[in-house]
Image (cartoon, rainbow, N blue to C red; front, side, top):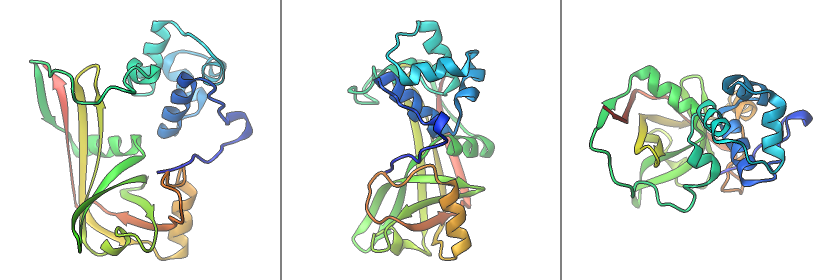
Length: 225
């Protein structure tokens, strides 16, 4: 999956601490500026920049507001869940699984950058993690021309993205199903290159764009009554 493109000089994050690096990573994943994050949590952009670039120990109240602004948890921002296998905690008794609306699913797809593509290959079913970008209603990702994913053009595939909140024992998942196809026209490739936030983390020559236009979009969320 990928290295991030540097932004304007004033926005290039240093992330000198683990907290700073996690703040930068989550902010960039959502495509937010420091000013936007500051506005969401009631802080100045210079304070957000300080947390990203310097060793700091913000109060728990500040961490809670930052986590809420970034759609994550304090535990994830501080790295408390780094070594803890997700999904091992005890379920809450008041848990309930609810269906997400089409609008909810599309919103959640825009908040993430890594998903999984489930395909059928000559060797059998396979699932591949990919960095992706939303281009309107299309889900686009890059692979190499020789990869198994490239060979699935013209077939129906499933794409899944999810999020787990270990501390709250909550989570959600979204699945899109549709035909995947290669992007071969120069204009289409340039458009996707322009909106991609990073290069594939897996490295190598992964310049072959593919896109999925969902014909079926479903999602579920675990909540507490």
